[in-house]
Length: 233
Image 1: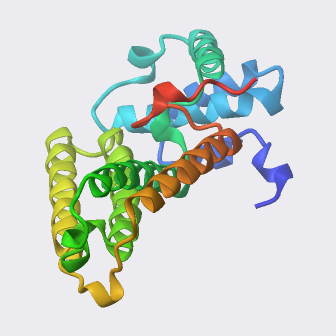
Image 2: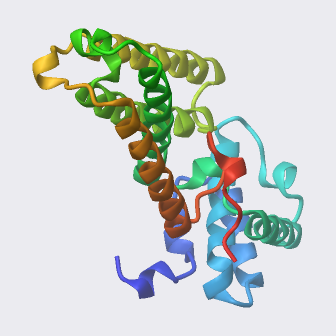
Image 3: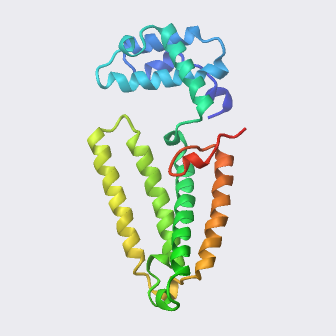
């Protein structure tokens, strides 16, 4: 899709194949006729279209959701201004970006935890049974945890999926991650070496700066460590 097509407002023909009911098509087209700055307001129109598509599946009409086309455009514009001021909602970021963000978070937290634990553990005890503190186990746990929690984040905010199904699936995903954590702890020492405690602390510090750099690059706020990230200036 070209940039020119991406900036194009939906036509009557586009709306006819959008899945919207006739009345909702007319409502969206009425909104389109009110648009004054297409480049800036196209996302608003797309959001209205998506909301109406979701609403009609549960029997809600455009009038019930927005009232008038004028009100719809004004309400959505105000909501977008608020979003820009406070930052995009965490779940609205790309799945891949959230997976990396969560992976860095888990890698940092587990490295810190294992580093502190190993510093006070008797020499030789951990090396005999590395468990989840082994380097291979740590990487697998953090990586798969990042992917699963990105999935949970997207799932729990998906309005098109039944609420109870979202809850059950999220619980199952968490159980799966915990099972993975237990399984990787069984990886033999030969391919799951354990490092000195201070090395894990170094990994935690390096990962922290990587986490900060990633959030600065993507603009992500919220999540597990959302309070530690200030909006970019």
